[in-house]
Image 1 (cartoon, one colour):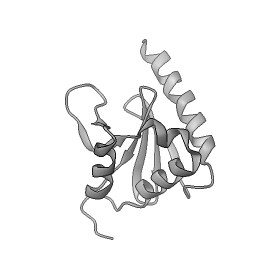
Image 2 (cartoon, rainbow, N blue to C red):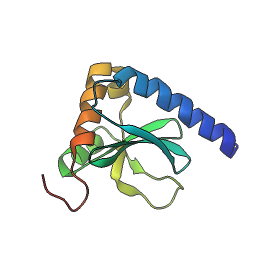
Image 3 (tube, helix red, strand yellow):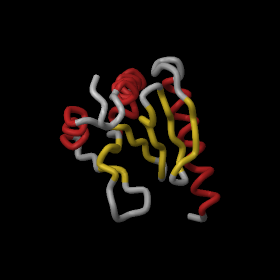
Image 4 (spheres, one colour):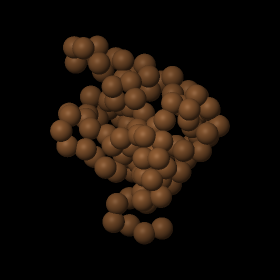
Length: 116
């Protein structure tokens, strides 16, 4: 897919996802990164939409939940994984309330190197 088409696809996916949880995740700012769409909250970047998929920031507890669901780490350019962000399972994407909970949990994680 050409870069411009991929960016438009990511933006359309992001808008659809964000509309489903608007108001339920707290304050956030949308920005472009890695050719995808990201959300920043008070604790920093917590959500990435890339390649039509949603990735959320994880810690050891939430990473295990993603891995049990068979999800993988974010790999923006194929090679090296960004293990701090994992894909969200389809069943969570299909359930607006559950998606809101997962996104809220990701938004509340402290920045790397900080404690709660």
